[in-house]
Length: 286
Image (tube, rainbow, N blue to C red; front, side, top):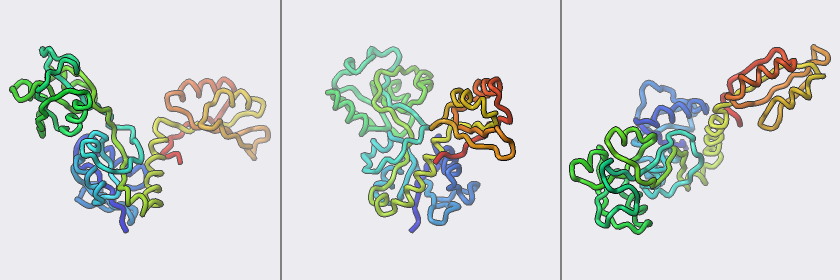
């Protein structure tokens, strides 16, 4: 049985999702021609390209075993799926926003019967109901920002990552409904029936995520400087130390460090006495 992974066919998370699979060792055989069903280098795994909004339902129904999509879409569809990992990209907020000149600046200023335009009617309606606010929710499939200015709605609920688009459209954020990011999800039955394979896919992807922003720093150092080197070098579980067989009294030391610390660390290590320092990219940490 093939494991089907549902990926967005287009949009801001499509290419990052494909690249994430590639880095995890599950690349497409032909990345230049994305078909509805595309083969990967693992014959037990295929990729299904579809709309990001449809992925939660497809995974919940078993049309796909695994999917990559946003938490906002999962919650909007009330999808009963297993969330396996937060993929650490595509962070955005579903927010309520009103026109800049509007007197509505917070939830308490939304009058009963106000009209809210959104692509997320389920999430928006449930959230406002939970706050005791009675409104009419109008579903729009696009151009939500224009709704207050053409008399369609009083406020909007829209996804934003920076708020720039809302500002450009003269809207101000008055509340946050949901903080969203991209998730790796699985069909609950598939996860139980194909657990080993799905866990292998999850492990490959998590290994890529864990390696982001990390470098492997390796060096040789005289034994008498070893304690100073150990103190200077951070690591996931401390540095690894081994003998260099061809050089008596020389030790090999390596550790995984944050990329942002590499510049200062290398200079510190040189001063202590380290030599032959290598800084190596890391593809995955398992």
